[in-house]
Length: 294
Figure (tube, helix red, strand yellow):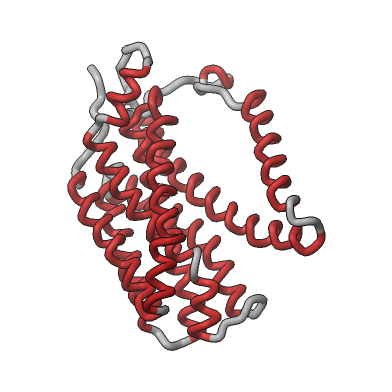
């Protein structure tokens, strides 16, 4: 393998994680800022129509601009070393199911992403009420702005840090850095639940997002491409991201019922076990790498 190929093998997955994490973080900022502006100045349905219009525009851009391979875009093709490397098997439904839905590695990643989804939405769905009712941090205040901005900044930093650590410190292995980030989630959320300092609590929202968004971008954006391969990457990404959102749904009625019954004192204690379970699950893939074909 040439030096250029080796460099691309490291850089491409790292940039996937970075781009995915930044994309998600900026999306939350748009929802809070642009969505708030639309609600303040236009009828309620506009807050749904505007994102739909943005998706339509992106669909047109994707159709006319995005290409399947670097060669189709005018660049030299290269081997990224994923699970499809050297595989000439025709892609059909059986191939996709074998690569994604019956692959023990992908199913393990899915279990880990379920834990990520519960932690991510469990924090983001309730931190506004938590800061207001427990710490007296009101909407529109400086401390609330610190917390909401921290979601975006923390997500971007998490994506950069997680991608860099995986490719530079662990030779493109995803599980070790994901394990570290799951433990980071547990510790930061625990700190958030224990502190009585309003400023610290507001800052810990963004600090927690470093570990949450970092591992989410790593698993959904990078591990899916690694182990699904370019032939099944879209399906693999969809499954991992879908499982994560499935878990997010439980935070609405499940975690909501817990908070209604026992109050804010059990909020972070209800989230932390999922971070720990994610760490345990992902540790089973500590040395996992995509299996390349001859």
